[in-house]
Length: 123
Image 1 (cartoon, rainbow, N blue to C red):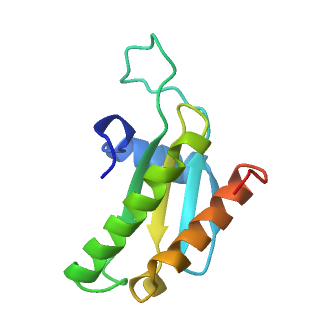
Image 2: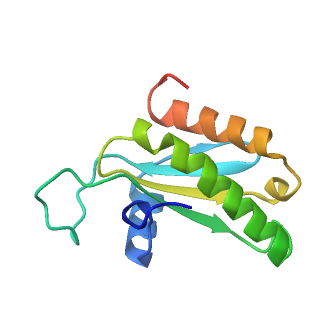
Image 3: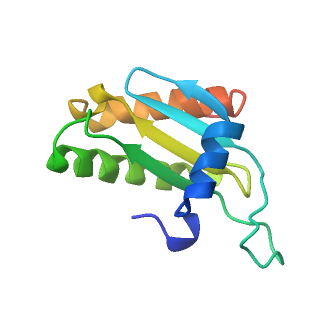
């Protein structure tokens, strides 16, 4: 599970990441990244943490499959939050094939998308 300070919850934050951020598409998912934005809702003493949100539509599968995909993606993103610049907004949108994919395939696509967005990081 993602810590509370690392979750995207507001519709406006999702919209900012999707509309104003960079996008990297992979066969199983699309990652939207808005780097280093400041959070207008934060107090501002320290650097805001990177935050992530997930979009898993009914095209992925039934409720059980969608929740399983969300759990897998949350786990994967939690391990990669330290690689993101402070204040980043990340939205991971699962595509229909994500429901049939295993954990390793989702991890590979997420790593490839983040590497592309971050300019060839370590992963």
